[in-house]
Image (tube, rainbow, N blue to C red; front, side):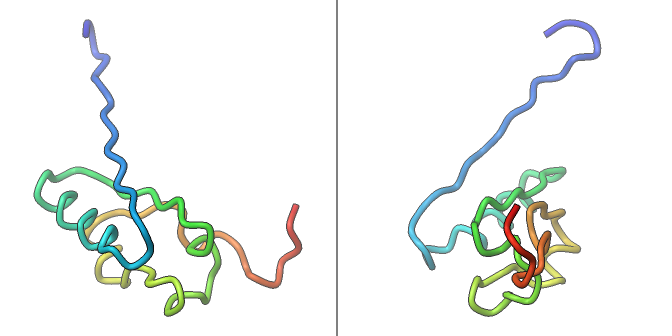
Length: 79
């Protein structure tokens, strides 16, 4: 790469429900440093659905930045 442009790298962790993806993502982000987590889980976008979705704790979210969580209210109509 030339100039100020830097390579952007992405890592996707995929797998079945309750297989440990979130815990692994946090461990990798902490080990590598400077990483952020983007959730694409269809239910984690909803506020208030923390238990049924195994949403990361607030402590985990403070440790590693997370995106794609708590974006909508479940009572809001779909666009």
